[in-house]
Image 1 (cartoon, one colour):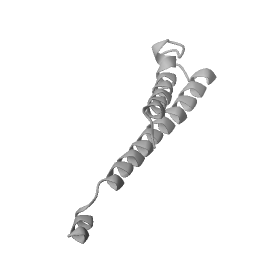
Image 2 (cartoon, rainbow, N blue to C red; image 1 turned 90 degrees about the vertical axis):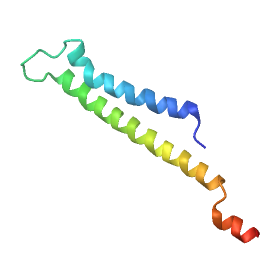
Image 3 (cartoon, helix red, strand yellow; image 1 turned 60 degrees about the vertical axis):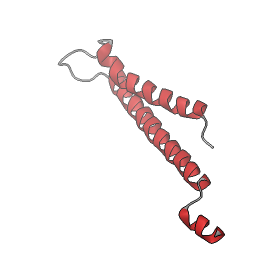
Length: 83
């Protein structure tokens, strides 16, 4: 079962990754028009990994939750067997 806490944690992981991608530019650590500095490369790389992991994890967990909901609902074939 997927809890709201775990879904919230995955959203936080995604948002952390998104912030790491944007931070060098939002905080102006990366000079405009200059070659990328090592810190900016590292922030964007780690942020990209976190954002992808959070995004994928969120939708995998969401798909698992939907699957749980569908397995609980009796289908039309189970009602035909009862008659």
